[in-house]
Each structure stands twice: as structure tokens, then as C-alpha cells.
Amino acid sequence: MIKGVVFDLDGTLANSIEDLADSMNAVLKEKKFPTHDYATFKTYVGRGLQSMVKNALPESSSDEATLKECFDKMMELYDKNCINKTCLYPGIPELLTALQKKGIKIAVFSNKANELTQKVVQDLLADWPLALVIGAGGDIPRKPDAKGALLISEKMGFTPEEIIYVGDSGVDMQTAHNAGMYAAGVLWGFRDMEELLENGAQTLVENPMDLLESFN
Image 1: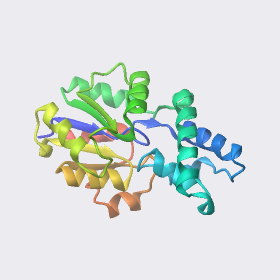
Image 2 (image 1 turned 180 degrees about the vertical axis):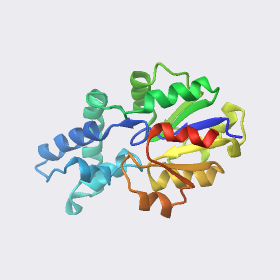
Image 3 (image 1 turned 45 degrees about the vertical axis):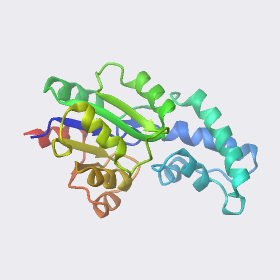
């Protein structure tokens, strides 16, 4: 019986791609590097913001010094602009309310830096009680390492088998399997169906409220 749900944040609960892209493109423009459209940035995210910055830089300018300079500037800009355009996907508020009414515990596990994860969650998810919110940093390694997911399982007081892990990327599906949780891939996020299936999605969710079928 499913008793808890762990959600990825970006591309699963929140559409954050425009704020991420706008911040990074501002850095690229300043450096006179080529910029990228939102669709391209969707392929760059998922493994943390440092990875996104590296992907966005020209291959000829991805040395350590340039990467650090651009990452630091991007983080400075994104910290100020991370909730300008970012919003919950349609149907997410209704899903979270329905889960709450069912007594299902909810948590968030993101590869976004913990401080930024907390900031976005406080702004967008204040209406729903969350068991735990974890971003990358400190002693929590980035997904697909399962340490954060297992910490959430312990905090909820449930076994991993009693938890659905919901995400939009192959990294999320790997995280679910590494933690021993049920892997649910969403189709409204940043990645496609093929990536989700190739990385072990056990179910695909087309609309947020469809997730409730997992509890019937």
C-alpha cells in the first residue's frame, strides 16, 4: 500500500525552465557566448545547476576557471530571479490537495541547490504540509544517489516500497530504483517518454490527477 510520495521539483511540480534559462542566458550574453532557447535548456537540466552551466557554455570555453566564473554569476542572478516566472504546473495544486485529503505524506527531493530549493518551495508550496524538503548540498549527494530519498523514507516512517517517487527525468527514475521506490515518470516535464522508459519508469503519468490511480 502506498503511503507517501516523493516529488522531484523542477519539471515535475514546478515549471522553472524560463527563470533558469533567462539567468544563464544573461551570463552568456555578458560573456558574448551564444545563448539558447527554452527547449534546449530542458535538455541541460536535471543533474544540478553546475551541470546545466557546463552544458550551456561553448565547448571551447568550458575550462574550470570559466565554468566557475559563469556558475557563480548564474547563481547570483538566479537567486534573485528564481520565482519570477516559475509556477506550479496546471493540476499540481489539485493533486497535492487530493493527496493531503487521502492522508498521503508528501516530500520534495531536488538536484537544485538546497537553499534555492527551499526558497522555491516556500513560495509555491506553502499551502501544503510537507514531510521534508531536500535539495543538493551538504551531506546530501545529487541524484541518482538515493541517500536523500532514503532519508525522506525514514522521516516519513515508511519503507521505500510504500513510497512513489515522481519525476520527469531518467535521473529521477534511476533515483527511484536506487532507493527501492516505485518509479512514476511524468510526461509534462523537461524530458520525453523514451528517456523515462529507458531508465526504468514503472508507470507514466500524462496529467497530475492521473497519479491518484496509483492509490486505488
